[in-house]
Image 1: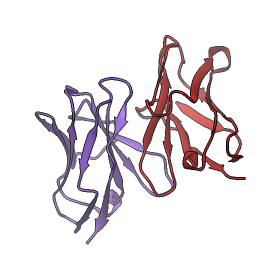
Image 2: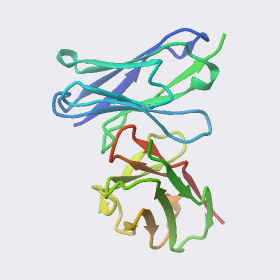
Image 3: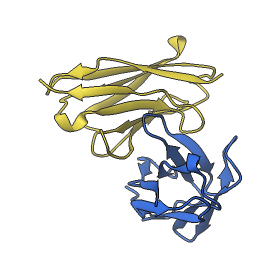
Length: 112
Length: 107
């Protein structure tokens, strides 16, 4: 059974760095890509970035200067790090395979 | 980046109606188009992949089609459980991009 679960701090101060972890089960990271998608309150979905089965990464053009996605295949975990957070980064962050298989999402609020 | 223009943003409809949501791609994306359904407080659910293929467990009243750079999601006979937000996503090339979304609501 495919499962993904996001974890991380619910509150981050402006200008600080966000660190999120996606722990997966039921599939292999070396055979599947994992994507991050975010959704600001009351707004639409935004593709953030992805780590592909071979370990390469791609990022949203507007976020790429602040964003890093990595993984630890031995722990079945994918990591998202985004620096210089602003209030506009307040959103629910999902990890997903973009096929059947989404995490429940983690709400991240950027506020002092 | 490829832009996905989705319309309408809001679609009031009655139960039993046939409804269609459309996304237009700014560049050729072939059939690399997915449709997602999202209900309040829930994670998105894949409905259509490859522009026309029904995902597992999706009712047959849902269908996807393509005409040139225009991609459509059609519900043949609206049911109450279909009231949700719908998003298209192009997965032809990175960065992937979503449409702005369509809110399907009861008239």
